[in-house]
Image (cartoon, rainbow, N blue to C red):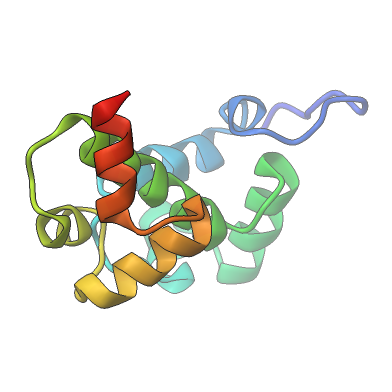
Length: 124
């Protein structure tokens, strides 16, 4: 693993310098709708959960599942703003089994429910 410069702030871009963490990022980006756990991600890249959690957090600046949650909300916002899928379909594609749970998470993350976000984004 190539060491990060001491003055470099953690970020996903810097994390790509670590081949294992880069693989985790790739997996999360390629398959965001899967029901990931820390154990499943660790198995995917053949690391212990503790090692993955520590290396990912040091490299990216947040734990893997927090990063995944933000990534899912970003994808959902893009789909809502530019797509025609229903809120339920968007929720499923980004890994939620319940439209209600997705709506609550989206509202917490974006400050408004998905339907309103869609209307405002498409009107802009």
